[in-house]
Amino acid sequence: MAQFDCTDDSSSIMDYLHSWFGDGHPVIHLISQLQTTKTRGPLSAGFSLDTNPAQDIEGFDESSDFLNQLEDCSPPTDIASAIRSVSLMCTLDSKRMHCAHVPMLFSVPRVEEDDPNLCPLDDQDKSTEGAADAAEEEVLSVSFQSKYIPFFPLYQDYCVQAVKAELHSLSEIFDPELIIPQRLQGLQSPSTAHFGSGARCTQLNPFGATPSSPLLHPVRGTPCTLWQDLEEVKASGLLSSLTTRGIRLQESMFELIGSEASYLRSLGVAVNHFYASKALKQTVTPMEHHVLFSNIGLIMAASEKFLKDLEIRLGDNVLIAQVGDIVLQHCPEFHSLYVPYVTDMMYQETLVNQLLQHNRHFLCSIKKLESDPVCQRRGLKSFLVLPFQRITRIKLILEHILKLTEPGSDSVSNLQKAIEANHEIVMDCDKGVHKKKQIEKLIYLQMLLDFGNVEAIPLVINGRFLVHQGPVKQLTVGATYNSRVSFISIYLHLFNDLLIMSLPKCSSRYQSFTVVDHAEFPTHVHVKHVKTEALGLPPDSFLLHLSRSHTGHPTAVILVAHTRSDKVVWVQLLSSKQ
Image (cartoon, rainbow, N blue to C red; front, top):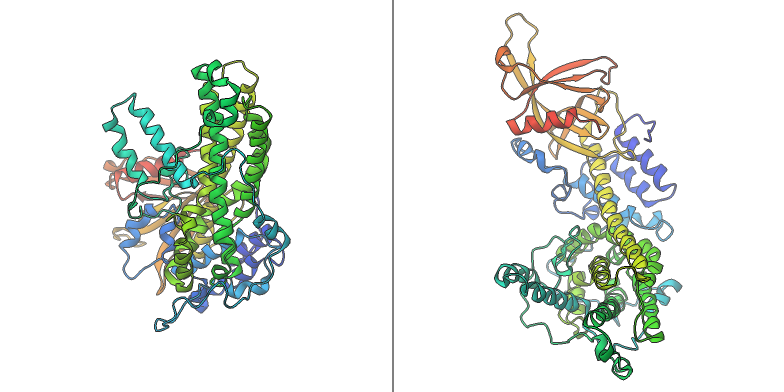
């Protein structure tokens, strides 16, 4: 595990990120501003991207009750917002951004309340945008037209129709009253998704928002084109010679083609309508625009190539032999594009919500774009979530094709490999999200911990993550003969390789901690049970023994958990061998 030579908390963060990103990256510039936060007060509002970022950082829920007991203490909103800004900046390619842009990168444009012009920007006004670079122009030039599917619904509508079809299939096996009411609740919102389930498009909601108002009109009747409806299939006479299973297999493989056509159509709206909008670009900074759309243009180009190859296969023989080999061929490119996009969706969500709340020009421009008939009453968020919905849906389609494929056929092996490759993409997306959250928490905690006279250690190092945290009480005895036993509040931060004991303190701006001891975990951390009744101790007491603390000497303390369940958790975690 990497270690760093540093003398204080701020320099450890600087050393880590400096070695990670290299010279000249915007992160280095912003971190230098963070180093003065404790002495100069909150950062400017221009760096604020999260109204309450502490709530968005996993791992702090366990201590919320304890922290709430401390009066006049609140999370360091300014620092946490800046940390989120750092994380957002970490998602960008340093070759596309320059340090000179840092002061304005995360300033959310605001309009004075008395400004009567809510929509001063227009596509024909204030043409300040420079010419798009060659890569962008190439992406925006995508104009592929499906040979076999002249019209297909937006992918959002396709997902709704697909889930309805699945519900109908399930209702033939189970009691429909036990299935449909619950599942249809997820169909009331045009943009519902949640990362992690990886099962149904309309069950997902990476933006964490509550469902929007129900659709005021039913989904337009746009039945998906079937393989057996193709003129080439009708003319071939295959429908009279194939078995029912054979026809279902062809339909399931054709669904991959048809759904990709639907997906590409929706991506076209996301890229050509939202991403390419000059009016929208004028309401945000270049970095904000990049965070909003990431590499969605390249994803659209990859989808076009994928659909072309699928249709070439169909054109070679109307009786589709297999599709697993084509999926497998495109999986490496999908992996390179989808993993960074889905990983950064948490930052995308944060920025969209902040811009909608604080940037009236952005809000007005988005409303105007969303009202265009090309969106079919779909919002920006429903288009931004498309890549995640698609990469999870492909696996389901492939699994259905495998079920209908005759065992032992030549296509089984490619199908299995394609399913595994697609599953790996989804898992790597999940790992990427967790890794970024872990880095956020480490940077956030580094800013909260004050080592004081205790030997400072770098908290942000590669491979470290927070396991558990929370308050306990430490038994103390006075120095005099008749001193009474008392308890002081202690806070524990347990990482996979480190245990930190600290005293919670409250400044005028935020809750922080003064470190009193730390030890390598699990090598020098041991837990022992004590006879609480014989010693007259609270029943939830336990002995924490550090065979080697920061002083180099062993130490032992009696800790008291707040509840019996807290004691069980702490004893189990502190006794585990990571």
